[in-house]
Length: 424
Ligand code: BJ8
Image 1: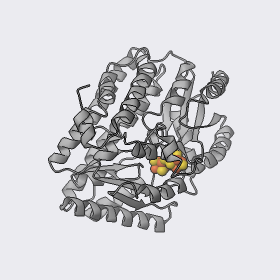
Image 2: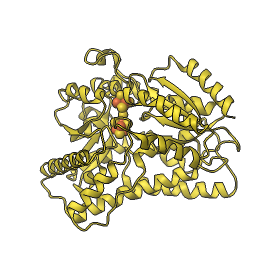
Image 3: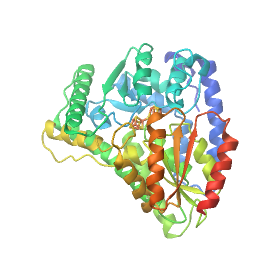
Image 4: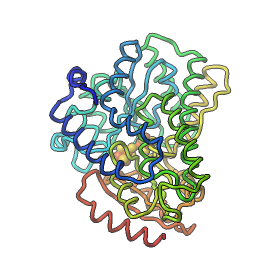
């Protein structure tokens, strides 16, 4: 990596903390990703993006800023990228997947807060996230209680914070509310950029995001093959990078790796052995660099064939209809697309269980591992009904609760190994 010290200083990063984070990340990446065998050649692009995630990509974002674009950071797949692009801005995901500055975090948040929330607080307090620091606006959404209440504290730390309210049901009233929220978001972006969003802008934004989602869908479908042409770890990495990379370039690279995977499937070549036990992961999002559970699962010889997660299929499936020829019609289509997201903050949420069953079938999974972050009420509560419903269909389920620490690695490995033995 080139020397980005000056850029990191300009962004106000804490060098000691940031270097420590990069060292840890680099080591984890080497041991988890680079030690895998039979990786598709197309992964070299994604390895490169990861190696430059705090370097070249941030430099690109700053160049975009110099050219007049605003950078919008967010924590949730409910924040519509179509609208951000239509406003001539760039979207980046801020969800953090590692513990940092935990002592500082526990001075402002209760200890029993989920790791994901503690992580983005730690990244802010430790001054280690260039994406947060480069963002012109940070959007927080009212989803789970943890996020919504923690944002009351977080917004005191970030002057450029914008809060988006979200419904928790899917009634006509909730739909109306979401549309109003998305309209307010449009107004906020227009005010920031001094430019009105036109029908053409919105159509273009929808087209770019639809193309990205189609490419990710194509990648998902290829994982149905046996042997799986790509490891679950690599597929997760691609889904994580979807939140950081330039969307057009990313789409091209995902389609390129899909071309390669199609050839590998034709030649019955896999990243994992044929007949390896096939696991579907379902539950809380796994943000970069949260690779703990997937690496444990795949180290048993099993292969992860799908993620029912916001960093995975829940966040990326469903395209936005772009057929309307006026702004209101396009906004309706965006609202309808986003209301299909079956996050556990919604009640009732039968769609999610249905989707897990559908994914199990589509990707020929032998079992489902439900991943809940400790203290995540929505997903842990829902895991009981998910387990009950899946078992009615004879789908084996393992419910796990964990956090970002390494302390429970041994215990998790034992439980995962036992589960993989059962589904073999
Ligand atoms: S649409 S899943 S990205 S809210 S893990 S912070 S739920 S206590 S992240 Fe999410 Fe949007 Fe839903 Fe997806 Fe709360 Fe649970 Fe923590 Fe969570």
